[in-house]
Amino acid sequence: MNGRVTALVRVATDLTEDQMRALHAVLERYFRRPLHLEVEVETSILGGVWVRVGDTVVDGSLRGRLETLRHHMRVQARALITRPLSAPHLATSPVAPEGARQPSEEVGGL
Image 1 (cartoon, helix red, strand yellow):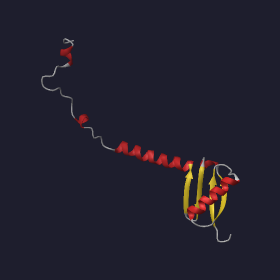
Image 2 (cartoon, rainbow, N blue to C red):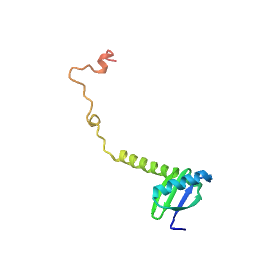
Image 3 (tube, one colour):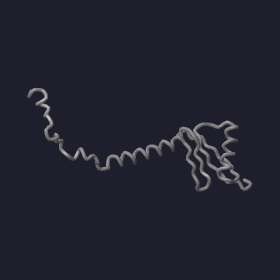
Image 4 (cartoon, rainbow, N blue to C red):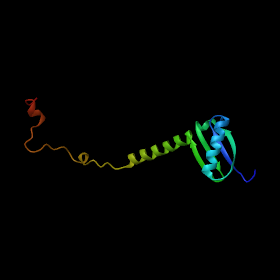
């Protein structure tokens, strides 16, 4: 393959020739070496591009982004659930200030 490294590329739909050339140029600039693209259509990625060159994986797929978002939301939810309440007003009982009228006094004792 003339010193080219193979890049496994997964896309959600077939690429046009122009899209293929543009992707090839972008990936060669990104990885700073000549690449041979092996393109697979993988509808499960939903959109975007997933690329593996050697041990390096670049996941620009919509599925990958959604999985990352789901992970972050779970982490945040877990943090909110396990965080102790820090509302001091919940720890004390409500006490009317001295001299304040009680609700029953305002309505004529009803």
